[in-house]
Image (cartoon, rainbow, N blue to C red; front, side):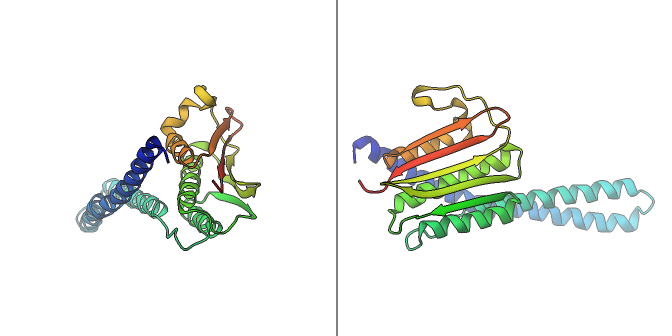
Length: 225
């Protein structure tokens, strides 16, 4: 491994650890405060129901505020649950991805059509982590930006390479290309992180998208080097 790749690997490892700490911090601090605020609003609503029965608009406003807080808390908890790291070391990649898809569908309501063919066993740990994070990030982008309720994920072996594709038929975008055809818009969608992970594994990542016709994220990673 070259010095540059070692540097990138250390950076990604540190980012992964920091990401997990951030998840815990959000759960232990802001989420708990939001729960406390929701409890206070619920108590206030109960007391005002007895004191101001003739002013239903005030009670309705408090009720709506409580519902918004409860919805926000649910969204945050679902997001935190989605991004918790599974146990990669002893599990097969196809099982890891299948569980991720089931969890993502449950938490978001997005239908994900998964096709896995001849996914080999004994895949290196860095490859497992990279594929997991790419699927996770790409599906999150579909859910947040594509404006659709369905996506497709394919994972399979082709020769000496592992191939991955995540696509949707959503809004899409018109990529302004940089060197090697990378869309600049990808930087704010987490695609830059995907590229770094794939580059560390001597793989390729490319994005095809067109306004109104969806987006496809494709990855090719060598299995034996």
